[in-house]
Image 1 (cartoon, helix red, strand yellow):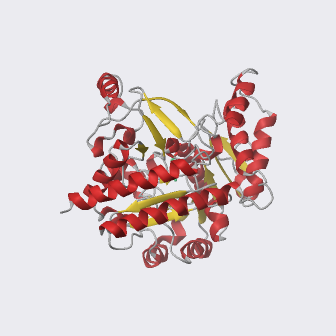
Image 2: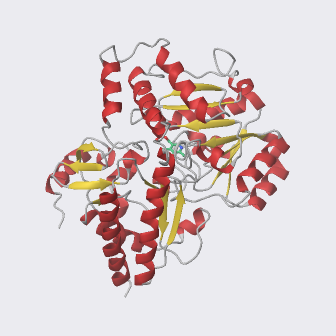
Length: 439
Ligand SMILES: *Cc1c(COP(=O)(O)O)cnc(C)c1O
């Protein structure tokens, strides 16, 4: 039995200090009805709590840790940068270096602006889209999460889905009115909205591979449809690749599906585990951003030297040429996930547990359902009690997963064959527990 005594005490104290004891809601394990392990340290594929438990980590700080925790090259880069000063509020060479690295794998990004969080990236991209098109409305998809700025906190996924609140109090009715929501993967719904209001829509923003209602893939042709219909009505297409960037493929969903957005938001991996994100796209649009253009957006710590160093080091590992005959890092990640999911699928069939398994490169997820899961409603209809049983059984066996069906699971380069074998064995036990709980 997993002992979390120290974590439980620390959590009780933290609740008197921070709302719900945490600085981001899903960390609280509230929907799982248990205590979150308090983390002391992490290295490679492993994370360790203050009770001395060791876990194989598939949360990866919710996405960024694609090369594993405390990777020697990333730590060295951060240390080197830190010794030269932690922030200047002035241009540096590292910012251009990271910009070039990103543009090499995201050719749709001709200009980039660095910010401090995914929330800032999407919020700023929307302001830019509104400024550029001189229109007010935006379209987002139910269950897609784009950070917590007001305009985007309408029918958002992630923590809101986990806690069953579609919208947040504090978002004004006026702001919410300008946000039109439609179901993901539903061409007819968006077509109808655009027919009526297309001329007022500044942008359609989408997670091209959805990761915040669980991991849900776009249907065949869906992203191409989004490209065509936005172009038809003069609205911008914004790909929020904060999560799926560098994961759906190295070049994100846009490379994997061959669809070019007008603007792209990146985060998580791009900062290598430090607070950093970015938005970018066509030069003609991006040059509307201040000081090149009139749309204002700024940041005291934007382009922070430590974050640049961590991002550059991480992207260098991800873009490294493989040894002859070896798969490149992205391919390697994809293969590891394939191996894991194939085994989990076998166990589920063995115990008669209906399971939907989804994968996009190094991000993946599972739903306890007989039916296909293609949007928020079908995700919400899955067996969430079964998920709870699965989650706790995995944690007990030292497998650290996101405490919500509405989150995605992440593979890192640090996960070894032994880690995967252990995870497969644990999953078999956990799926048996799910089957038993249903009897
Ligand atoms: C995580 C995430 C965000 C928000 O990023 P933060 O850094 O948490 O503000 C935005 N969009 C997507 C798709 C995300 O997964």
